[in-house]
Image (tube, rainbow, N blue to C red; front, side, top):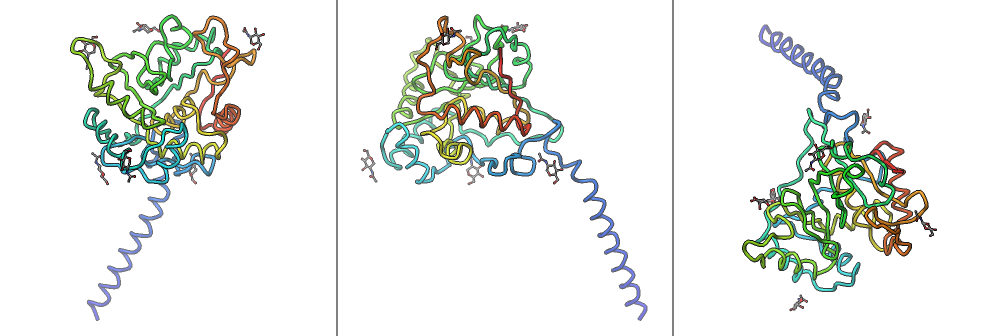
Length: 305
Ligand SMILES: *[C@@H]1O[C@H](CO)[C@@H](O)[C@H](O)[C@H]1NC(C)=O
Ligand SMILES: *[C@@H]1O[C@H](CO)[C@@H](O)[C@H](O)[C@H]1NC(C)=O
Ligand SMILES: *[C@@H]1O[C@H](CO)[C@@H](O)[C@H](O)[C@H]1NC(C)=O
Ligand SMILES: *[C@@H]1O[C@H](CO)[C@@H](O)[C@H](O)[C@H]1NC(C)=O
Ligand SMILES: *[C@@H]1O[C@H](CO)[C@@H](O)[C@H](O)[C@H]1NC(C)=O
Ligand SMILES: *[C@@H]1O[C@H](CO)[C@@H](O)[C@H](O)[C@H]1NC(C)=O
């Protein structure tokens, strides 16, 4: 009898502690479990304020990732590159003999707020004086032919990541991460040839030890989920922006959209090129999506001068 009573008392006190603990933890944990130290953390509740937008698990390729066949089928037709999945896997494994296997994305750190500047190439950057504010962010992501020389006061002078694809590639600094976008089978051969035919002593286009390759499945996800299948596929700039939301906890967006005269041209062009349109990309839809993300405070959008 005595033992039973003791056990009962023990049981009651243990469960009491449990209930108490659960209440304490429910009360305390949300604060402690913040995934970053910004005012808001992106994807904190898995979704991104706009319910259909979820964190994509693998934005970059790694050597042991196997691209799903349905994603390959979507990718092979966007620029009519053709090919089959076994060819793709073979060529990609050759790429990974030359570049490091990307470690998974850095997870958010509770005590830190990682900030990104995504710098588009619009003329609306001219006279903006955004330069120092862009350089102040942890990561500065530039796109395609985006450059800073001669435009530092408006576009900044640091570049931590440079997004590029075959037709837009140019020499970049060897401390900048080349983020390679591929749109067709030939682009994989391009990466291999750029990296394997470096004459000694000659400067290579980019530092292969820092190279990363965007996952075609992520490209498809952006087109289908973020842009709801508008246009043929997303522009490099929009994909860079979606990528920034996966790399950083706070994202500042510059140089997107037309200039104040409604012309879509680049900040380095002396005479605005009236022919520049948004090509196969759904420019208007992308712009509206950026505005929507900004209105939900997912990112901060700077519309320039
Ligand atoms: C996440 O959910 C909590 C509780 O439901 C809410 O207070 C918080 O604002 C949400 N965060 C985001 C980023 O939506
Ligand atoms: C390979 O994949 C496994 C899971 O399938 C993962 O845990 C591991 O980190 C990956 N290795 C590399 C080098 O990416
Ligand atoms: C894939 O393409 C390669 C090269 O064109 C060809 O040799 C191979 O037979 C194809 N494989 C399949 C499964 O169709
Ligand atoms: C970049 O600009 C800052 C001032 O904004 C300057 O101090 C720094 O020297 C510049 N760096 C380079 C590499 O030009
Ligand atoms: C980067 O370039 C500098 C000078 O151009 C050189 O001294 C350095 O070794 C290079 N680093 C790498 C990793 O290639
Ligand atoms: C923008 O384009 C219009 C015609 O499309 C042209 O008249 C105007 O001069 C351009 N803007 C600038 C700043 O040149």
